[in-house]
Length: 113
Image 1 (cartoon, rainbow, N blue to C red):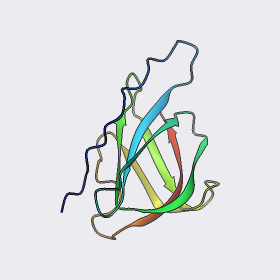
Image 2 (image 1 turned 60 degrees about the vertical axis):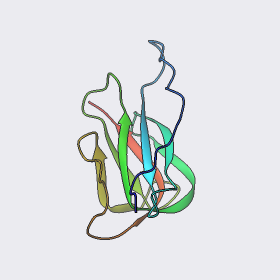
Image 3 (image 1 turned 90 degrees about the vertical axis):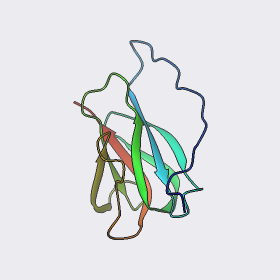
């Protein structure tokens, strides 16, 4: 069983100097075939996924030019209920779960230094 599926997406467009920085993340469901990618603002604002999903792992896959990108997942759409204080960076690709199975994710918040 593959944990990660290959998700083909176009490369992110280069940001202009005035554009807010973003972080591209990938959220992986338990089957490994239901991975989704999202472009999330890196300004610590809540990014709603518009639905709550069971997520097995997550990873930052593009944070070009950003120093120490970090994201945190929330089990609700509004970003008020943390999913067990789970956060992930470019260094930690098996975000969530290895030991606990899946967590419910409804929104994400990302930032950088």
